Each structure stands twice: as structure tokens, then as C-alpha cells.
View 1: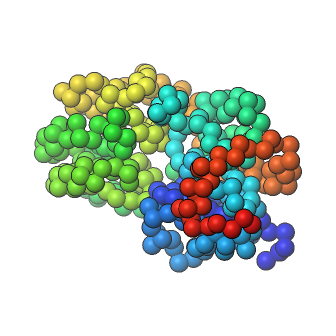
View 2 (view 1 turned 120 degrees about the vertical axis):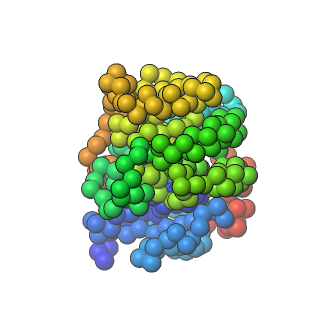
View 3 (view 1 turned 45 degrees about the vertical axis):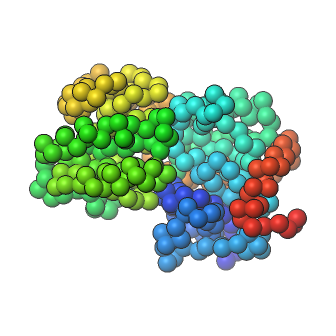
Length: 355
């Protein structure tokens, strides 16, 4: 390989992050550059790595490899990992408010040099935060994870030949104060027994194990519980989604498909939000009819959150990252130390060397 090749570390801490970074890995390798994976903690399963993918197992190996940039779909990355730190997000802004009373999507944790935002509604707030903090830059690129959704893919494993019934996908966030999974269980059980719709159920990996087992036990000829590290085929296979305040609903909307939400924290005109259990089934029926006004509201909303439909967000991310690699970060202010966070990261990774 040429000495001019760039090296990109794919830094993940959850299984769902594999699918978020693989489009970037594909774009990196396609242009002759190098990519390696680093798996942080015990919540990410190394068995999801493909035989062709390279893994660095220790911080010392990462330091020896010397990545030019670190691509992170999570919230934090250690300062002692070399390379430009790039936040590429693990979801859209679903409006979740954290314990500090702030929107979690816009919480600055003093880890990143560059944020690659998904669309105008997140770019503009991050630009204001960049002006205030002066410790990072912002580039609107679109979300690389969605690139495969806009390209012709392989056969979908969730289609069933000959089954013409509408498919409803139920997803729910793991946050206890926002999740509807336990509340709507009886309604979903009753609706799935009717058999007029096909149900697919998929939860965030941090969902309560008790709730996961409850839904697994509910499986029948009309309802299937799915565990996967790649939700895109699931999203493509469904006609309507039932959800709460999980950011996965925004990915579903980007296909121009309706979403029914139960007690959404930020109900808006692009959603069919209901507050009562007996309103869920009529709302799904309405969503399946694809009302013209609702579809128009969805399209308008999608232009704000992710206007890129060309499947080339990975290339835009890499262009923004390369610009920062080439120009350096000397014009950015030094980030706050956040000693407690970095000590926790060192303990988690078992790394205590100064250099």
C-alpha cells in the first residue's frame, strides 16, 4: 500500500454500530485506504465481525497502528486514542431529554473534533454550539448508515413470498420513561392474533431482558421477534411502524412510510400519535391507507432531517474528515479535561500509560 494511504479506526461499543460504520468501511476500502475495528467493552459481540474485517484488540495495538481518524457512532471516545475524533451519530434527534433537562442529541461531551450531521435541523444547532465551544467543527454530510437504503440491495430476508398482508413493524426505545413496550403488550397480542397483519418486533439491545422475553414468548404465525445488528432490511420490509419516542422511527419515515406513535414525547404533524390504547389499531389502519396530507408532511419533515437520497453520505463524511486531517486541528480550542470521564474510560479499557 502507498505511504499516502489514510487509516480510519472504526470505534464501536454496541452491536448495532456495525451497520452504522460498514458503509463507511466500504467507501474507505474502495479508494484504497485502510480501516480497522476497535470494540469497546463487553456489550459489543466480536462474532459479528466478518472474516475480511480487521480488528485491533488493545489500545496499544491502536496506538501502534496510528489511525489518522477515529469514526464513532457513540457519544464518547477516549482522548488517548490517536487521530481526529469524528462523531457520526447512532441515530437521529428523536427529541429525548436527558437528566439535565437538555436534548441528548445536542449534548457536547468534549470528545470530538468534528461532527458529521445528518440534515439542516441538526446542522444549525451544532453550528451554534461550535461557535460557543470553539472545540470542534461541523460538516453536514448525511448519515452514512442510510447509504444502503438508497441503493439496490440483495433479497430481503423478512419478505415472505405469497404473503400479501400488510406488515407492521413495532420498535420501542429502552428508556423506561419513554418506552411503550410493556404498556401496549396486550394490544399487540390481541392484534397479532387477528392475523390480518404480519407483525415484526425489534427492540434496542438495551431493552429490559424481561420485556424481550415477554415478546419472544408472544411469537406466533403472525408475529416474529427479530434480533439483528442491521435494522435497514427490517425497515424496508414493513408498510407501517408502531413506535414511541425511539429515533429509529425517523429512519422509517425517510422511506416515505407512515409511523404511528404511542405517547410520543414530541408529537408532530408527520406522525400519527395516539395517547390511548384503544386508538392504536384505528391509527394503524389509517396509516396503511397512506393519507395524502400525512405523506406530504412526512416528505417535508424528511427534507429537514436528511435531504440526501443519493446513497453517497459515506463519501461526504470522508471528504469532511480528510479536510480536517489535512488541515489539522490547531485552530480549535483545547477541550475541557473532563478528568473523571477519561479516568472511567481508562479503567474500562484497562489502559494507564501516559503515552
